[in-house]
Length: 128
Image (tube, rainbow, N blue to C red; front, top):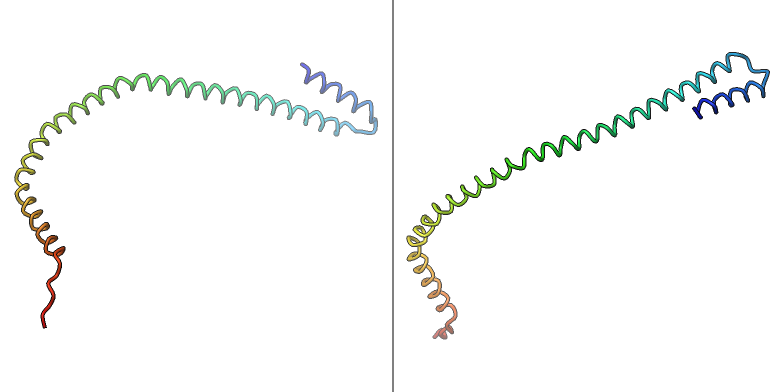
């Protein structure tokens, strides 16, 4: 309403202020004001539509999150069960492998210690 009153006052002022203008200029001005009004309506409609779209996206995401939460909990429980079963099977295997390799590891450690002892002993003087 205010926009159309302002537009009417502007048109009257332009018409009164310049009698030399022809009808084509007034028609161009009227078309310009009409284009501005249409653009404003289009921009406002787009803003409202965009805001509504954002609300729809937010509600969609919240809805899907609510639907997926029980599924995620169920998957976590299944993964914990699988991990427990795998651990129960791997522990005896690891103990068996350690028992098989422990004598070899001990032997290797003894050899390394013997080499280190030989290297750290003071060297005997070389006789000529």
